[in-house]
Length: 193
Length: 73
Image (cartoon, rainbow over all chains, first blue to last red; front, top):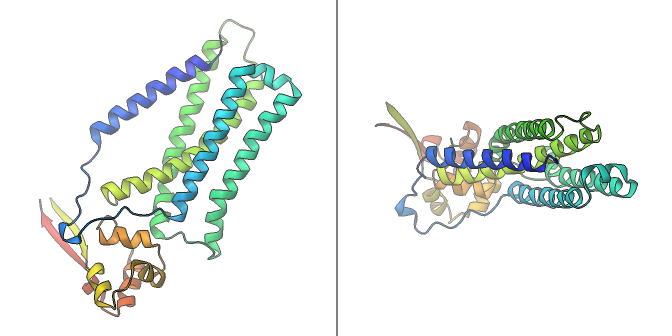
């Protein structure tokens, strides 16, 4: 049996649980002063835009890799040179593009060539919380899925190690973008927490 | 339990200073326009450094820009 059904179930249950808990404990949005007149929507910061682009890059890589694995199977992809090179190109290329877009912007700010102000830094300091949760979740999902799907066989093929590491990198970077965007959304709606 | 609130007069001070735009204030204070917007909407409390920069931009004491209220719940 392939590990995908187990991964889908674990992620589905976790997502629903987080949604229920989040909706149950969300605070009331902060009301604006009525004497401020009509409130325009806050435009995006440069970091926010790059977080969206980075998330888009991560999603495209995810969709491409899921398509590759579901069409050919993980073992076929790993054992076929052409497919393995496509797989490697996708996830390393996506990684480098993400680093260039998001991390590059942060690096430029250190040299005064882009703006990352104190509010951006405060949001950035909290984004790793989302990263940690996402990577832990990915590791748990893989552990359970592989253990259950290869139970009673000779063992888990070593090619899965490569897939687990690649998926951890992709999840880590996408979660970084999600953490940044969540931080901006939260501050806009609920104020500084 | 007492709940502290920090209010500010940034919007009024901007208009009093030749209708300074949010972007102009952001450029002078060294932050993004979005931070100024959230400050005016009281969604964000600045650091001391930013608070002093904003007060210096308006050439007024910091207490004239930011006020600290302690309300009882």
